[in-house]
Length: 434
Figure 1: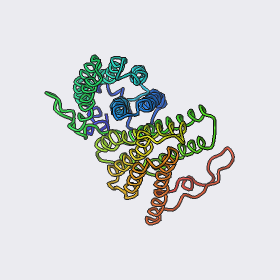
Figure 2: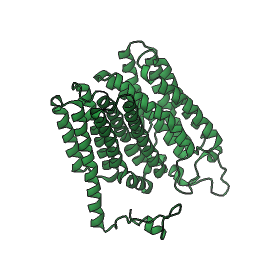
Figure 3: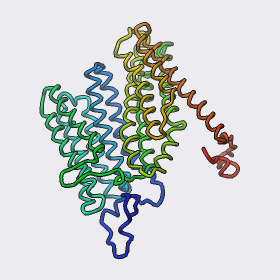
């Protein structure tokens, strides 16, 4: 095994070293790991989960409903993220790993189906599916890596997942929603705090981020795809809601505003930052640390913003000229604000800067929320979209000015013959420095 797997010297390559059975399950580190088709197939489960969360928030648009949906989102994200880390180390195209992932998909689909009633009659089924997904996947990995140099890491993870599992099941067995939340909240807290203290475990010690050396490019691409999943759910809501209403001017305006908002969020994240951040983590001397902070923890803020914004999209198309409510004001301004705030944290973690443009955007969105009582839903939604679109355009201008200052040539237009490849040498189609 190469040191890319663990951050340690590659022992199997030494004379007389005996390969471990887990080595056959690991991803080859001969180059940048690609996201496999099976990983994309696996993500379909979480498209459904994101849709369920969005609909649940719409149906329970209160402070309590938002808090419960946030707790469930944290669980869904953690289930996906731990699988993402697992497939960063292990080869999804290996039959044993693929079968394990099929089992995770079954549990994940069942968990997603139970999300609407998780704080009601379906609590036991939701918690059971979540625990089976998390603990079952880790038990498989622990068994596969027993006596392997990666094994201690997964044994520590399993310890903390077992502790939180007791709280998940205990909470599910209680009928009172307040008591259930009181047990599930520390369960989530234990799971999210464990990576920060290195999964410190009695008799097993703790892990360091050097032990979590990962393929940074793969981690970045996986999280980028989850952002696409969330944005896709937003577009799905927009199209479905439009199909359920007779088109008229106000509904059409809400549709345009909703779609433009989704495009603006995509532009903010993918036009420049996503690619450059992927390069930064791929080149990092400690990709495990950057993967933990920038991707594992910070991306959930942006995903939450997209889900909250999708609720506003559906509401504005259903009642564009209706009475302004505190709930709508919160999701219409709060969704974009969460995304922008998460993106600002992401840039800070990866690049070390916090642009004033994002601070101005957050202030503008807060101002819109403050005066929302004087607006109707459509006007508020359109104004929030304009603010986010302005940030996207500001980024385009700022990146171009920076590239000119650094002497980076602009992307030239390349003639592409019908049915062929770009005309000219490869460097014309992909200039250096882009």
